Image 1: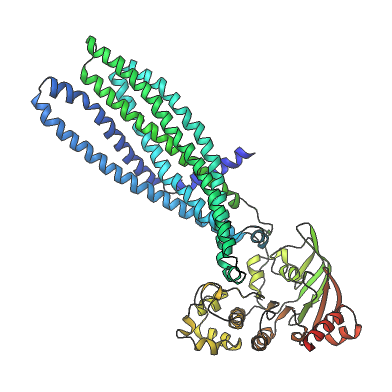
Image 2 (image 1 turned 180 degrees about the vertical axis):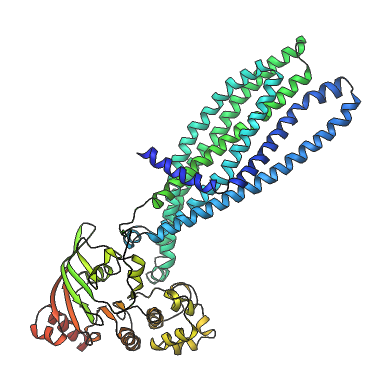
Amino acid sequence: MLKLKLKNRHKHLLALIKENKFRLFLAMVCMLVIAVASSATAFLVKPVLDDIFFNKDTTMLKIIPVVVVLIYLLRGLGMYGQDYLMNYVGENVIKDLRNDLYNRIQDLPIAFFHKEQTGVLMSRITNDVNIIKAMVSTAVTGSLKDSFTIVGLTFVIFYRDWKMALFAFVVLPIAFFPVVEFGRRVRRISTGCQEAMADLSSFLHETFAGNKIVKAFGMESYEKKRFFNKTLDLFKLEMKAVIARSLSSPIMEFIGGLGIAFIIWYGGYKVITGSSTAGTFFSFMAAVLMLYDPVKKLSGLNNAVQQGLAAADRVFDIMEMESDIKERKDPITIKRGPHRVTFANVYFKYDDVMVLKDINLDVKAGQVLALVGMSGGGKTSLVNLIPRFYDVTQGAIRIDGMDIRDVSISSLRDQMGIVTQEPILFNDSIKNNITYGKRNATDKEIFKAAEAAYAYDFIQNFPNKFDTNIGELGGRLSGGEKQRICIARALLKDAPILILDEATSSLDAEAEMLVQKALENLMKGRTTFVIAHRLSTIDYADRIVVIVNGRVEEEGKQEELISMQGEFFKLYQMQYSNDKG
């Protein structure tokens, strides 16, 4: 099973490489030129020695230097061509692979992002893909070039002395043994190095993003120590890889030295006895010495290939991951307009824990439904099922009578506007953040959305107004300002179904008042689900639902629920006494 899986992964990589087949062909032509030039260099040793130095041939003295210049010119042009073309292919393949990986990650469900660390995913796209680049552009290039060179030089040594050549090829398989053995070790250790690097990336992301808390609690020394320990672990793994990579070449060097020593003894004996010429021997010797060099290089290239394969495994682990959220082959497309949302006997399980149980709700078009209850009761899980961030375990959610699993995911989410407790903004201009769900919006539409969100005035106070960059996660704005930008974004999208997940709970009284006004503008005419922490902010709701331990315990208007003196009444009393105190 694993072999088939790996084979499919390699097929994917080969398909990406195949897209550049014309440049690959030209690169291989350049490599053949290099191989022929290298072989010709060894071949010319015999006429140089025998014809020029021993036979004193003046004609050859004029011809051979010109030939040597031409050979090295061709070799130089070939080297430039293959280097440029193969690096182009490598960079292009990695660009496509990186795009495919990011594309796959973006298509995976919310549950995937909750389980995976952000830093680890970043490491897969940057570090692991870069290691594959080294395999594709450098190792594959070197392997092909050295293989062509080996073939050319093999022809030369067999042509010069086939008996000595046979002995050289007895030594070569022995020299290849450390290449294979150490290659296995490099691949195994490389996987550990990549995992350690991913862990380090995740650690950096967390400590940089949470730097305010690190400083507030005086934990700088603690985090430094943790970082030093992680870099020490990475250092130990890297040194194991260095040992495995470094040992293969010296062992090959020694085995090759034994072969060359024998060739010197045997070839020298033949020259002394007169059965061979000095030119033939030195031409053979030059070819053998040149032959061992690409063979040694293949050892280093094999290490790069093994590291690349280990990185490819980590990348394809993500790319081959299946999404839990499946779409029908012929999904229904929902058109924009008022929508009725119905929960029918809905159950939802997350990590083997039943979070929602037997939820039955019917929210008519344009109604506002408030969801209240203690933290961990299942309110957020309930609203996350509507845009299919997760799928129900049992039962169904229907929009206008259609099961949302029969609807195309893109058209379903096009009906949704979402404002969360934690404002999610991007390191971009205010304008681009507001138009995030509607990139083709006109300036008039943007200004109107900002005004309705009570954001226009504070935006105008910035020197660059709507073109002001707000920093990472909107760091240059206050909490209330960030939330109003999020509301303007939802207003501009103008979606008929609205989900507000504790949109005002983290704000102070003044900011909450402005945001609440903006939300009232946002909710007009929309089917709205409001998760509320402060009960005072939901007196406008058409209906309030109290969720306790994943079940609907009470349902009705605020006055009705208070008169029942049940779960809602307890929450109301708790908040009222806190506010009074």
